[in-house]
Image 1 (cartoon, one colour):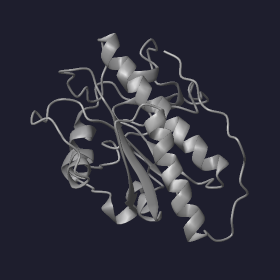
Image 2 (cartoon, one colour; image 1 turned 180 degrees about the vertical axis):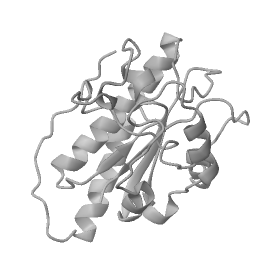
Image 3 (spheres, helix red, strand yellow; image 1 turned 135 degrees about the vertical axis):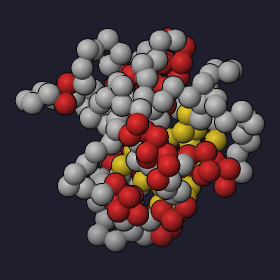
Length: 212
């Protein structure tokens, strides 16, 4: 499945200090870009609106039958919570899954329709993260959903960067998921007022890009 990423009309310099007016306009444009890219809901959030859950992190850590460098998320020298809290604003969005699609956890994902839905989300996160970079927010960080290995490398026997001397074969798209970082996307969607299916076992294909 391919995805056409818009080329930037202009490239902004990295500002020493954010101009509040320009920042607000850029955040609005990022939401609009996400919607054009297929997001059904988008919202700008403050960093303190990111909801962390130790139980979600524990569930991911226990779901280790199909491991990748991003699932479970083990950064011995970095604190993902501290990193996210260092930002001010982010763009939170979701795409529509096929009817009845279950949450696939760490994978693998055998149904091609489900896997392609995750691919759409990963491509959209990449597109928004790239747009941030071209707007001068070079430290933007994007998180998707699920396990990038089951989404992008379903034909590979291993996650390559887990092997010494090997690199990720999808370096621009492979990334941690919100749940692997211990983020409760369902709670955040509820706080955003998004209409959610009462069956919480269905997939919530949500992405988060921390901007600045």
